[in-house]
Length: 495
Picture (spheres, rainbow, N blue to C red):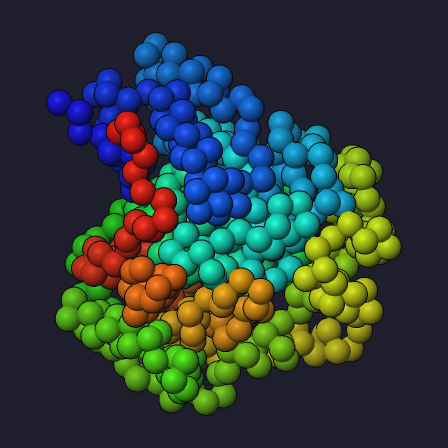
């Protein structure tokens, strides 16, 4: 009797079905392609997928033959992955969401794309992002606006919103996001997903279009914490092409799944960062969900510690300490100007002059053109070091395992508005790891039949990904907040 169900399928579900003979990788890929066909440019028109990999079915068939002959090709055998389109792929265009790079195929895979292939994963599609990952609504000149499958009048967060919307709508099993300020955790929060921003250096940025190498991170997104844990080990590792990864040697866990402990909140001390909550009526739904999360953590055995931190202000962290706009021009120019890359444009200046970009990023990229790594830049780096010390001493002084707060103070914004009041800057500016997990929904409305997702963020010390997975998994399993979007139901005939 058939037991596999495509909707909300996990790595474990797929591998069980492969082993029993109920499912093949080729059948699995075919089902996801049907969902993309039905829901991405038709139906709710989520507009999340830029390019479907032409050889995905062919590769799936080859993996099936390998499985029959000698077993799985690796820990992600036959698992379809959705890549944010700033991750280099040698056999698909990599555009950064920009018409300035339309049709550009890099000469080699990004380090993490290569690792995914080696693990047996199938790179299924490249998905939309806010152009060059510059902001948080997931709108680009190459594809336009991606919609949130829980509320088609809203954005899916960003900049990795194509990954978020596509995973939420069950277009694949795993996804890659990148995060310079909020950009893995924002779409995870807005699309009822789990997303991990790892410690800077755990996962290579080699071959990923850069925004700010001071703050850039790449990491896993999925519908479950377990799947992010399984993906994280595949992604982690030393890459000579990214010097930051040298710091990960000795700090990578051999198996992040050992932290998938349903009782993982017992005895944990978690600090509540009240200064990251809003205090206006627009914040009420998110505050209520976060207060429920705090109460649930307590019920599951955690010690919840109220913190008094008026000096920690998420907005000021981004405007006064973050160096993302200072780094954008020199770091992007280093990618575009690499003679081996053979890109159609060679600098941010050329892109600005060409006009082949979405007007929504014009203000930021023109400001980036005026900024220099001068005394103001180095003062920000000094403030960054002081912020790192502040967080470490706060956690040490209270004997904390993690901090908790809502990823966004208010729900993700409607299409056409600019993202506001996100709290991701603490993790991105310090470079410390954090995980976002589904924390429930706002009240239902006419456009959001089950409400808009709310994400809960847990932040820890450097290299504490295992501990954060343990906390996030226990909370996820104890609450089960994840829901299927009402706009992308099961298709007729779907397993």
